[in-house]
Image 1: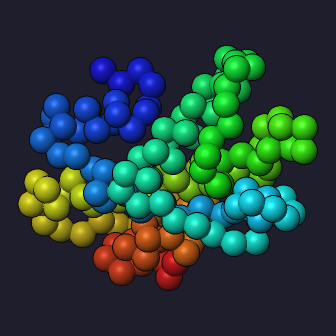
Image 2 (image 1 turned 135 degrees about the horizontal axis):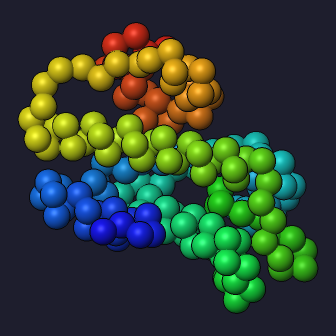
Image 3 (image 1 turned 30 degrees about the horizontal axis):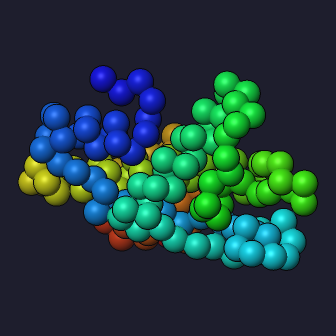
Amino acid sequence: MVQTPSPYNLRKLYWTFFRYDPTSDWDWAVEVAPSELGQGSTWRVGATTYQGPDASSFLDAMVKVRHGFAHQDKAQKPPAYAGIVTLTPTGRIAIHSHHATNALSVLLQFAVLTTSGLADRLSITGQFRWSTKMAAANWERLLKNTPAGALTAKSWKNAPQL
């Protein structure tokens, strides 16, 4: 059912099985460089957030960039969302370390926020639990200073302060 993990396909999956649209629960925080916001350096110095439909559009743009790189699509247009890629002075797409970190972080933020939202939708009681495998996989760094990290720190059993 989900061949490409676009927001449309993900929403369709959750709606088909659970009658749940997770979009309103999505709230990504990503690292950005000044050059992605208009002008300046390519070094990450700040953060920006995308919520609801904007978070969905950000995820869609991220999937399209991955598709463009995976399939060597030279016609791929750069996304209009800071935190995914940087454009070089010649107009080429460049991916820096914070873009890779953002991709992993958004994936985890998606998992945490969608799981929490679905649990609420289904009226599932109980508490999620932070495991040592999550710490070993560096989830703390990827969720720090994000809404998903704040939710985890506040409501998960054994969660670190994020």
